[in-house]
Image 1 (cartoon, rainbow, N blue to C red):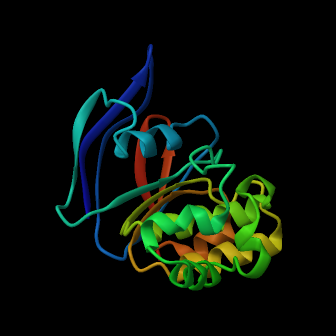
Image 2 (cartoon, rainbow, N blue to C red; image 1 turned 90 degrees about the horizontal axis):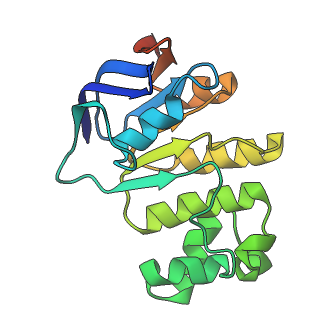
Length: 197
């Protein structure tokens, strides 16, 4: 789905990461961990093509449909409802409602403006929208930030049903244990495999 060869990025004289090489296969789950400010989000955004690399090449498979989920949820239209958000991709209301129900957004919640949903509900809606768009490779930046325990559990349960590959920046160790096939540590300009589960 994704191959990265010798990726490097620096700001001014600070090297965030260098010589990063890895691949992500269909259905694989990879977690990126490390201290704040070490370059995890920058690496994710570089892989997404949102910011330029200093060196290296990242390639997506022809079959890959890339979807990104940011921390700030800024790409979710605040004035639309969940139903209106999914209708362009799912064509009819019944299909969109059934799809939303799989992501635990049902009944009146599907008709509330997105701005009035809880952070956890918006996180699940973002995941639903990416799946409805046919994305099979997800890049998730701190998807559990600001979620309480029940919301985390709900998010984990819907993510488990996603059949594609996932690369996620995460801090939560319990989530990593349930989610990741491999865990990569980002620190001091290097990225290495910490653990294969």
